[in-house]
Length: 225
Image 1 (cartoon, rainbow, N blue to C red):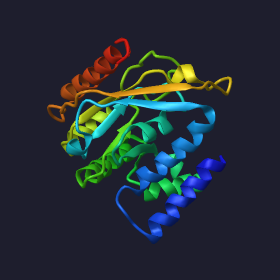
Image 2: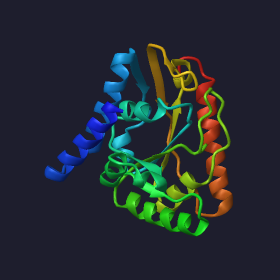
Image 3: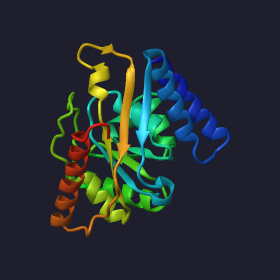
């Protein structure tokens, strides 16, 4: 909690006083390191494409547990924001930090507001802000990968940007979220080859969601990937 408040407040103040591209990545990476170093966790990232050249894009990753968010901030060497639940806007410090960052809010419960927020998010991405989405919508607490929801791929199609599948390999072995126990070790993250959603039609979006899930599932089953 202390680390989150410190880094969130530090980011908000520094961005207000000295606006600069990349500041969210800097403070996000600092937050992740302050969490990971005392726990004895290192992050090993395998990257297959020039992520700067792909930007803006939509990163999609499997979601194992609470390590995933700081893990992504430590692993990905480019500026990006998160697609966040609209309810987080009301959380002190965190909500303001999300407002100030390249992240976007999506309203999930109200279909009409959800559609409007997706349109706003697409404009945000077209203007140059990459985002990361966990398309399972919930944590697996394992290396199982649940069905992918359509929103991330609808967003990529609407913004006409590439999808970059990202595999989180072993967060679940380092942190037991239910028992609140953490083990030292190496968190392994790998990016996979990007692709584009063919169109905004429902079938093409479903095909893209299935393709991304298959890529991540295959990556998980490949030794030392």
